[in-house]
Amino acid sequence: MNLKNIVGKFGIAAAGVAVVLTVAPSATATPAQSGTVAVTAYPDWDLGTDHCDDIKIQSTANGLFVAAEKDYDGYVKGMLRARSSSGGSWEKFSLCPMDGYYTLFSYGTMSYVSAEKNYTGADAGMLRARSADVKSFEKFEVRCPSYCTIKSLANGQYVSAELAYTGTGYGMLRARSSSVQSYEKFSFSQG
Image 1 (cartoon, rainbow, N blue to C red):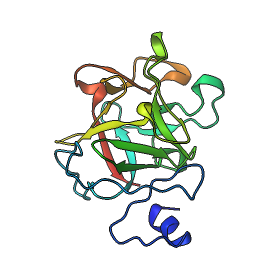
Image 2 (cartoon, one colour):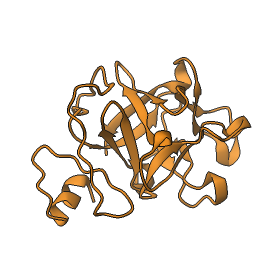
Image 3 (cartoon, one colour):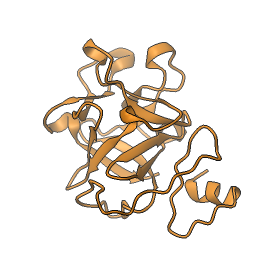
Image 4 (cartoon, rainbow, N blue to C red):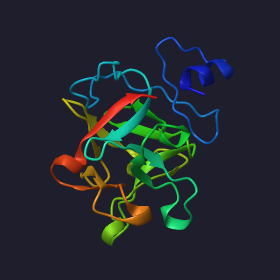
């Protein structure tokens, strides 16, 4: 179900209004239209600054789609990984502009994506779809010149796809880089 269907289902007037999903469907938010959102260029399908977009995220370094690992347990539950060759429900996100930042909402886990700023070592900055609401760990800057970058506002680091990791950590997304190289480049497509 996309945001337009949800808006219709709950009877919310939707002319130019975006709905930000939470675990409780009655909680909605309207993005700010102040022009302070950090997108500098838009993909061909019009990544909007005034509405939410259903998207799939693909790592340009390995060509794989990002999935939220909803079947993982414990502190890695909802980990985001660039590991899928096609985009299904675990690979579908809603990107919503707010007042100077973006949120990512995972349809697979029905949760907001967080950058785990307090994790340490090889898990520092891990992106997980695990939050019921938006606080500091759930705020991102998104820029799409000829590729897209995602930067955590919680720690000021760019999101990387960890392609040197092996096993169940392969392709883990982490907010851990101070510069943009190949692991920090993504493409967005309509979800």
